[in-house]
Length: 477
Image (cartoon, rainbow, N blue to C red; front, side, top):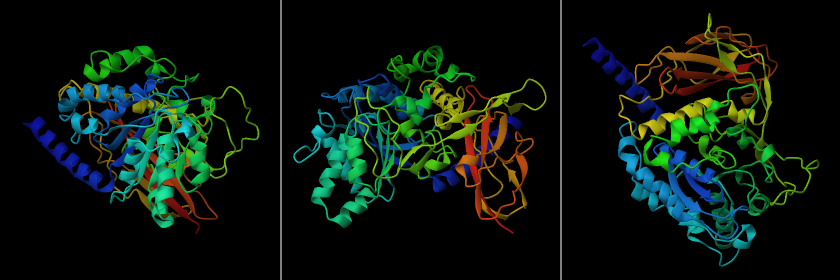
């Protein structure tokens, strides 16, 4: 009886938290452009995306070309993965609501043009993919429309070409203002054309196809000095591919890099950390800042896509200085590592264990009952997520009321994220692995913002993490 009463109390708290989250956070709508079959990673990323189809509203799945697949498209490969999803969708619904029917997703599979880049942009080059983008933009929906680009972007370029040709300037501006683009580098020559001809488009990219300098490669980068197990082939086989049902069966082995396209939608997942309208705040998809890149030192050669100077500011590589927390056998359960990492890939791989475990848990949902599987914890603050204090004033960060749907024990970790705010000096929090920490604000001469992150992790298998971001504005005395 006592155990049953505990479950009822926790369920009530979770329901309240869930209802609050539904009000506070909207589903993002997204259209995927994929050069599926150019590399197995598109199929890998599609498997993961479908496991979040109840949190991200998929509005289109368009088969496209790229510099690696210049004259063919493969929509049937998209349908194959969706059919596998359809076999496990009823079981996914046991764990979270909102997973769409496979038939509804199959209706969203569209074709781009089987031509490379700008060869497929111009009058009489419309496709069902480009028309679908325009149709979605024209809907009476106040939400931005994300275009998650895993290959070439000429389907979007064609949509913009037609909008400019057929709409008034005011109508075109209104439609274009809704666009949000995240491209996995430039995989054809239409990306730079879009940025040059439509300077108002919100665009996240590491320009050119020199993948070694791209933030998104942090998803599969082997980093010396950390545990890289969760991108290993053995981990993928155990937690994703084998004994996880039809979706695991269609998840291919790694050929070049695992899930290179996944960062293009990771920041659309409502996990408490991500804020897609603020790439400079950082999240699962990496952190980006708005500026015009300097290509004066970039060497030509070895690139299929011409690297051209940018004529406008874009959301692109940003640098984090990151010191991981590592488990300790005795005393305080975690502590700072002795090694600090600095770079743009760090903005993404710093969250890698969390999003890999989240993926593994959702693969478990494909077959397991609710009681057998693990589910993410629910962080609950006892104060607002944004507030203002005076310079030198103290305040409390408190997540005492946080709960876990499975009754798992919870681990708390609070930390200051200097790069996300305007105040760049690090702020130490003392014993940061408790539910409440006391912070004294620094002395400031002008208004500054501080970002504090709560990383709440359960002790289930796999361990799952959710976050709260607290933004504190500090005013001078």
